[in-house]
Image 1: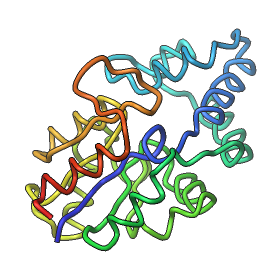
Image 2 (image 1 turned 90 degrees about the horizontal axis):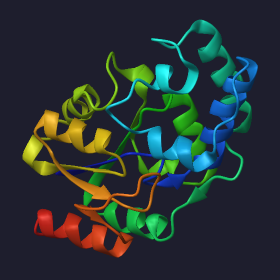
Image 3 (image 1 turned 60 degrees about the vertical axis):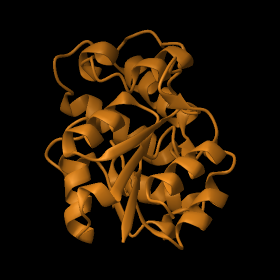
Image 4 (image 1 turned 90 degrees about the vertical axis):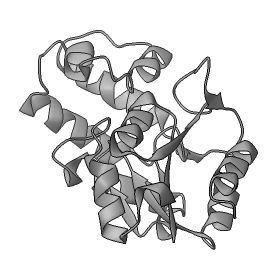
Length: 208
């Protein structure tokens, strides 16, 4: 059997509205100015920055920041969620030939709630979030955990994501990957632009 591991935010669903509003809610409560939405989304997946320091000015996320983020996100994460065009049809096609999973740096409880809300949850027997592992992406732990759970060899798997964190996690696990360009990042190279192109990349990879 073959396995396709999808990132969630920016790959399957556009959750940018909830993410930017939540970060700005935390910033406002910390007495910081709000940031422009595109600026947040451009940087939220950057593997080279310390997110706590970048968004809140602390070396690590504090209990207060985590509590504020959780409170707001839990209440608002279903607002304005949009499945990217063509994704539902792609997933519906892939389910016949592949085991499907989600590896997200979001909390797994929220991830399941969000995917169920947009009627994608049932396609993924495994949905892992940052709370399911000791180290989130770009560390390979999440990818390796999914491979082990489904007893799939590395060369029979592929990771799909919109951020270099996704690609690094795949590479660190020794798994092939595809970078997509319809999410929160604006990649200038090595990224595909359409869901149709993604479908071809997946099926060509496994000669199905």
